[in-house]
Length: 125
Image 1 (cartoon, rainbow, N blue to C red):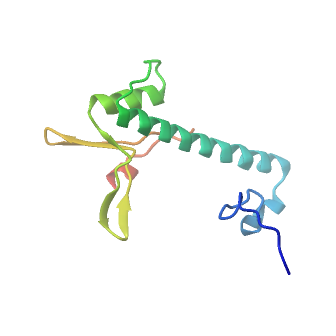
Image 2 (cartoon, one colour):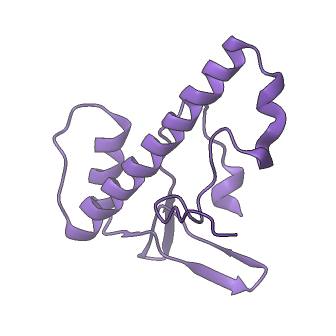
């Protein structure tokens, strides 16, 4: 048997795929919430990439009171490094959004783009 090739979606997971089958029991409101959250998550990923680029290239954003502009400009001002992989061992590693060590002070910034408040637990780890 010969199957059609679908290279554009190979290795990806469908929003309504079989591996996340619980969606078949969602009502319309829950489906809408899940769909909207998917795009919020993708937007957060894009904002993190934009912020990392701006910090790396030292491009400050217009001061407009947004979390993004404050995060980027503060990270640049403190001469931080974005998206630096930190490895303790193969089971304990991570990537802070921005990190810097200057004058005996370790600074870790965690960009939050969602609706939930941040927690200091994540940077502590």
